Image (tube, rainbow, N blue to C red):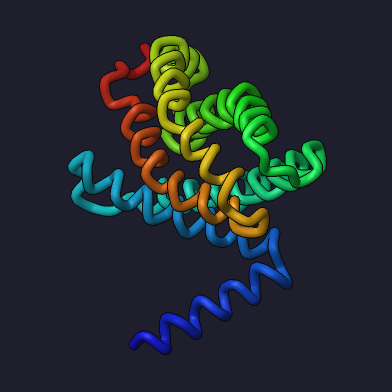
Length: 186
């Protein structure tokens, strides 16, 4: 069994080396799917909502994986691949002041408008109410992980590390973004 896992990991790393964007996009899509399945079960959904699941896979594969790929590539170019503490702090700060607020907003918009199909006014109200809490929580959770990512994880594995952690973060966002308590439009 160990040799099968080792061969699988070797093949994955080979794909990551030869097709980095595609591999990161697929990985983000798969982890988004698993995160959504867990979220659905945690919220008491008995029958898996396939449409919702596929829309979350789409978000991970088309947006989150590629966004992370280019973000980390650009940050490494801007900061010339340096890993000293001052540079890592700058990378984390840039990431937390730009990508973090943007990605949380995109997720909440996408979830409300596309996944749940809610009217704009309900989604806007939900974001106005919950976005500050989501972003505050993000700023207490992600900077430490960003530091670890930029300091210790090689560039080609940063999106994968981020996607693995985002698996847990996605469950939190799913639970926050749900509009179960919102009344239907009149």
